[in-house]
Image 1 (cartoon, helix red, strand yellow):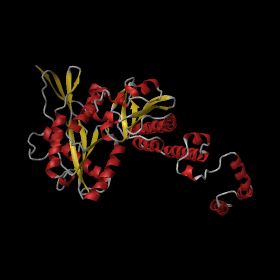
Image 2 (image 1 turned 120 degrees about the vertical axis):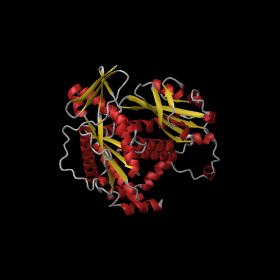
Image 3 (image 1 turned 180 degrees about the vertical axis):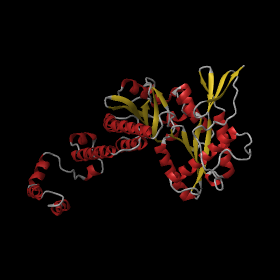
Image 4 (image 1 turned 135 degrees about the vertical axis):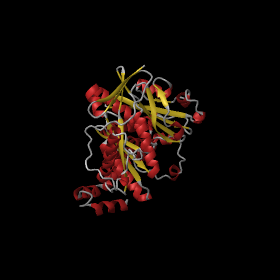
Length: 456
């Protein structure tokens, strides 16, 4: 008591209003007398401290102080939850915070956060926390099936149900380890977005108080989850090319910066490829922009199929693509370039009764050999690409060109090459005609049809 009073006196004028502190301390004895008269004083009986008070006595003399303490903890935790959710976070961070806060109020062994898909009939466990979390992440739930399915269908909480109902269609061996479960809907902007389900192997059942607290936390979290999902979609659109679905130039710059930092840590080099389609303009001019759009979509898939899982491909603009290829040099990068050329040259786009094809010119530059900044590397690879395009054009026009001259040169291979003028206005696709089983094949340069052939 004296420590508490001294604390108030020390804080008067800084933490606390000195007039209120003075008024409180002068009337403290009167307050204490009123508390005693109301039966709200601390129970100093030793038997009560040992927990020996009977249930009847406990009911007759409830520990109001403990109730107040619990209420204060609840209010503070909910306040901190709302404060933490107010900052922009990724969906994963938001759900991790959500399940962590739930655990402060409600015990569980496993917690699953389900989000409804676009069809509004199936939900997926996008976040799993606790026991068996790795086995349960990605679990699907159909609205109307099982306990969580009921919540998704009716947007109403459930408790005191058999946990095995949620795993009946999953054939999960450890489903019998759970004795109790509770599930409540996640509603944001008056719209159901999913559900959170708790499973316990210790509790016989979840009580009404558990459900109340779970609903309280879930109401706050649902809005935060919805906002984080919307932010993720907006950010994804900002970093994605809508035509091809590939990362865009902004995303490319960010990935380049990450690769530079990784290269500085490991000492490994990486390559940047600039890929420019040959004959694409004529596709638009001859067959229309819809055909051009389909060509870009198809070519982006073809190029991607020739890259490794950890390589990075972006649409840089127009008919130009840029790829970042880590830990690849010399013969390996030349082999990759050759494979991409062959794959692009073999791609045929059906347009009516005809098939249209384009070529690709590729230039490579190495970090940090050919530059240390994004612009320096891209310019170096771009120059190499235009030299390659010029060679392809000359080789297509003049069959006597030395066949040993490579069609694609990296920036490091440009030394000694004298290119006075690089004419790209009418660069030929430079790919041999490919004959499908039927139809007409059309080969294009930058401005017109170069050749066509009917197929028997």
